[in-house]
Image (tube, rainbow, N blue to C red; front, side, top):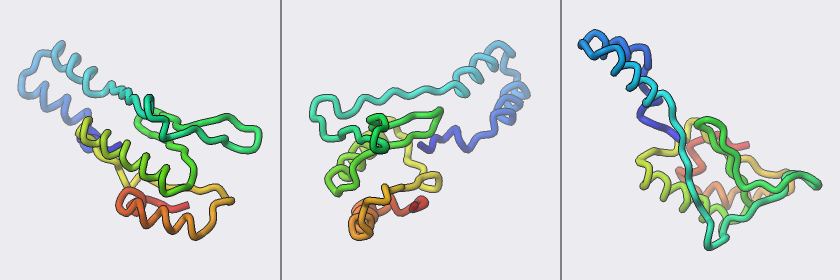
Length: 135
């Protein structure tokens, strides 16, 4: 996800506040607040539209992985599942006022997904899938 704070140099902001006369304790509190971020998103609880997938023949079942400010989303390679993901991301953007960072986004497919299915998914996702890397 792209956040406004991704474009701010923290040291510069801290120096500006100190130069403007903000008390050290307040600057420290503000810096702790803006540099420590966590998000929690509850999706798919009642409708069950986004199911886990198995990662490999004997691998674990996964629907998502979150690392700091990065997200990996797993779903079946189908138009229906991509529509669900697209809707979830759209609702997240609307609710959080954040945007998907397409420059840092990618779509990956299992080798078992046909070229036709891949092309249909790219076409359906439009800017949601076309702005990043395709693998």
